[in-house]
Picture (cartoon, rainbow, N blue to C red):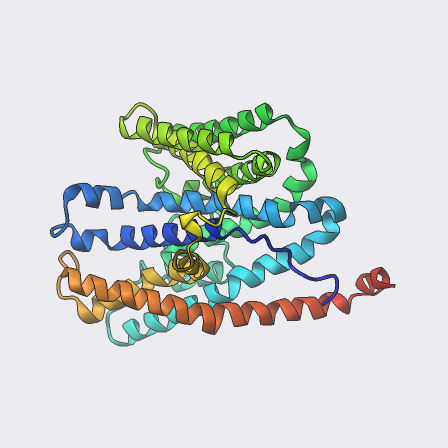
Length: 371
């Protein structure tokens, strides 16, 4: 429909890395069930799977700056409703569908005499429906735990048009942008450590929102740098990869705190991936990896509740689940992700986009602009 086409950048590697990150979160949530069967070093690595969410936040800022930054700068706040409608259509329908499944599951548990009031607090359900559950209204994660980050994403979407209109990263020198990346990372580190945080995963309901907004903003700066350096990407891509390796090494050695090291490491990684994302030889753009990225939102939202139900019906000892059974769960998660992506997420997104577009075209201001 004229005037309402959603911009899209085709960088398969950025989608691919999102898919791998989603599966890192899945493995993080099931790791303890395999702790007695896998090497301790592997379990320790999987215990850091929550860091994939930090990459999600940064990647979100990168992609939105790439796809919407220019339009919002050109049209100002008049373009904000279209942007927000597109983002709501992207995240809300599948969230609501899976939340509905959680409500049905909680109702069945209650009727069976096995309620979990701490996991499914009915009085907090409106917060989850509106996706504001991680905006400081409750100290607990509940219902579908991973959706806390989607709540923070929604806040970032509301923040984004104001960020675009407040500052144009293209007008600042490269050195200033790199400095701003460091300032954002230091600010996040300072806020979290002042609050007693020992990791980025510390007290999610307390620090998740500031974590999301800081890293989302870093992602927008990284996109601006990639756009500036895309004509000669080799040296900055190598520099980004080296920075990611350095900060990760310093973190593993205990020399730099996680709350500072890993946002900077992910910034270097995303810079390197962003500068090479369009290259056909980039392994992250390989079709199967790219498809994992396409269905990653469904994977991320469905796996947690799916594992709760899986353990309830198929597992005797949640602390010791046989590896073949865990493999079955991973296969079920993959199949469920594909089914939800094709059967719910994409159709609902298209339907809601059309509804928003039709509503926008009926507005007097829209009619005036067309004439």
